[in-house]
Length: 283
Ligand SMILES: C[S@@+](CC[C@H](N)C(=O)[O-])C[C@H]1O[C@@H](n2cnc3c(N)ncnc32)[C@H](O)[C@@H]1O
Image 1 (cartoon, rainbow, N blue to C red):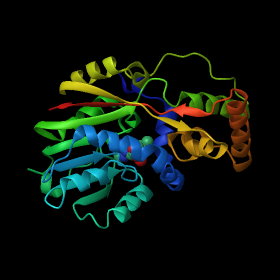
Image 2 (image 1 turned 180 degrees about the vertical axis):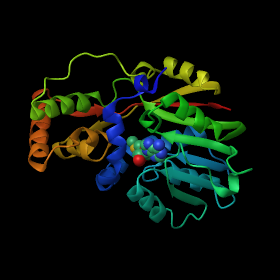
Image 3 (image 1 turned 120 degrees about the horizontal axis):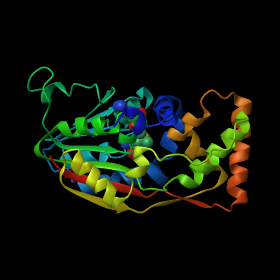
């Protein structure tokens, strides 16, 4: 399968949008990121003394709880592309010396020096976790396999994605509002991207098995987030959806906001499904 079939241009722009989104991203921690991060750590279950790699760590929603669980004899390496988010993690973890945050592309990252058995050799983490990150990889299967490759034999992975349809209530209306403001036709039907094809519990489990995870399991973490005009717009400016605003000027962004909120109000949308699939397994 080619990388082009795995991803889409909007997701690639979204990755670049996490730097400007950082302040608003952190305002979504309590209603969204922290809850999904905690749920993932309940699946990955880091134990005292273990080494954990938290890939695509954002502002630490799963890395910080993992650092508390591994305690002072363990260690968490948290990696994210976004410098402002990595700074937030480092500040938040001031009392957790067992957590080190790195600003890097996790797919290029060589691993913490302490985990390098030889230059360029794969490290041996006890746990690899990645919450709402793998679908940003241009080649999602290869990127996921690389994350799994950081595990020691017998180590545990917990990789969290949105369940099919999650966030669609805001994503669809935002896409319609953006098209309107850009003067483009409303988005029509298209072939589903890879992430959309695998985002049921059964499909995701099978896909993880194909990536080399043994005994794959998928936990469904149900969540809804209440929408007010403020929180609905925060979900755009503080997440990967911000990538859809790429190239628009301030007046156009204001127009998108107005159209998007009007569509939500017209359709009486008062909450959004934020349910995730937490896929886990052993190397
Ligand atoms: C939706 S956020 C999730 C953050 C965090 N895991 C959480 O659940 O709160 C996705 C994060 O993945 C990061 N990211 C995407 N691709 C990455 C890559 N190749 N290497 C490191 N970080 C990446 C982005 O910068 C962003 O912070």
